[in-house]
Image (tube, rainbow, N blue to C red; front, side, top):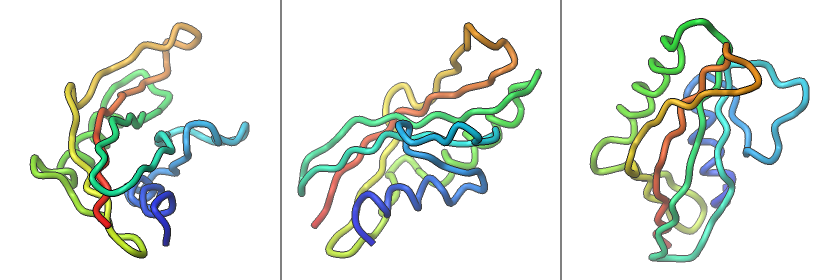
Length: 120
């Protein structure tokens, strides 16, 4: 598994479909997770975002998913292995932020800020 695949597998491990934010299919059904698709070399830290998306009158579903992810990415972060190394995923600041959708007031979105550091 390469770096990109390892990061995608991490975001796919939370029970919702996950997509790189530039590759969400037109027929994708909510809820799902989108994440950025950037990698770098050893020792470089990259600031990234992921978004939790749902259509609901309540914030409960996306808030529970945020909590699940927060428990996996502990304060010290989490290491995700790939062929030839690992990526250290840590929470960024602010960790989570609710976002409004001007086109649909039933869309619930939480943006997660995190950093990646590659360890080869």
